[in-house]
Image (cartoon, rainbow, N blue to C red; front, side):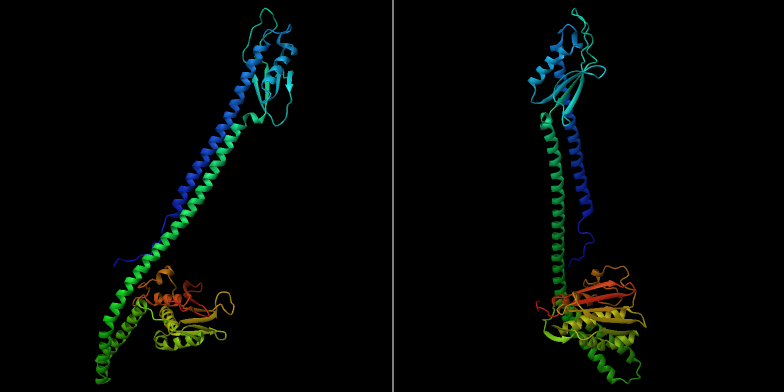
Length: 421
């Protein structure tokens, strides 16, 4: 039979999310780069439009007027003609002198317009008409409506929006996939554990039945021999050891059968405090042998409707663990309180605290696995059987370290069990 091991890390969630973060960062960087590129393309587009306008105005003003291009009347008609031909996209056109003076202007300038300033780049010598001079220092300032490049701005914004949606979608899909995968792995682990426990239970039941009969015969014959021999006989001590070990094996066989084939629950109304005191009385020989004291603290009575025999087995297992974990002279505290919520229907909480060394860094869940124990001669079935019984009754069992030292086992029981198997 294959060994079952609970995985420490079912799935590398951090590397997976780190990979998703890298992909999202790459998408964001690509979107930003595309956005900046489109804005640069918008500027280049406007500059090319302005350059075409400069060339058109330059050709229309060449050789006009007696005073050459220094005469504002030369520029004004050319600017008006240019504005009339492209009035849907151009808001204003201005000609600026080398010293910054406004030579000619058409249209209306507003703050929301995109302004491009271009130098007239084609210097020309004075011709026969004279007086044209160099135009290289004159500037033409063109104001464009934002709508003229709206298609580029819209493309840039759409690219950023698509990237943002892609990143958000990727994160949502990654989170959903990770959650689904964790659920699948948890379900798979639960199924494997159930299969393992089923096979383990079948094997345990077979072994328990095969061991119980010869073990009972060995114990019975040893006790008969003890009765027939004088009490002072040197073999009495060895026979007592055989009987004690046989009783220990009987408890192990009982645990195996309890684990393999849980008994049907018989629900009844009883006082939980009386059940705890009865379990302490049954463990009195262990208390005396370990020189450990049990103290029970409870206020009033805590009546519940549950399986008396099953809970007695649970209390015996957990109290015995606490007694064996406590040193000589130690104290085991048992506290009975109301369950979570504190109402009348909140059930009962049983807290068993030992004065031992605690869990010593071990995972509490591992100690509830079958055949896992921190004791040298333990079977590793006490906590596993106890949890199975309590969960069938609709309760829960947990194990934690105490800040004062030792461990605390908490049993939560409903006020009325459902009786489901």
